[in-house]
Image (cartoon, rainbow, N blue to C red; front, top):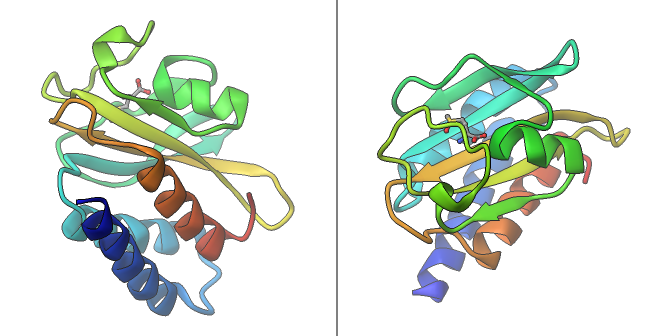
Length: 154
Ligand code: SME
């Protein structure tokens, strides 16, 4: 099972690396990352970026049901990941104080900060699952590696 997950991340990393190689448009790269991950990874119910714009998080490229447009830094799982600058793995969203429910079918989630080469926070990647406890340290490692590969910073 964990071997299968590692293999899937490896496939995604190779595919995304090839797709984004040499491109410098952040939104085009975000759309490509989402397109590959959402279709390749099992149990990804909602996959998308919230970009840092004017001191707030604003919806970016995503796949899944309709997401909320803006999130304040410090609010919800996304805003907490942005404020702390650290990946948040939430096994049960109902246990996370202030979780923002865009779709009540979401049960667990992982949110990873995205930095550019200069180390500046440019976005967070949010993945929700309709399964409880879907994400673990393999997801954290797999997603962080892909984001470093594409956007340069960690
Ligand atoms: N779950 C997020 C909100 C965004 S949606 O799920 C797309 C949060 O609490 O930050």
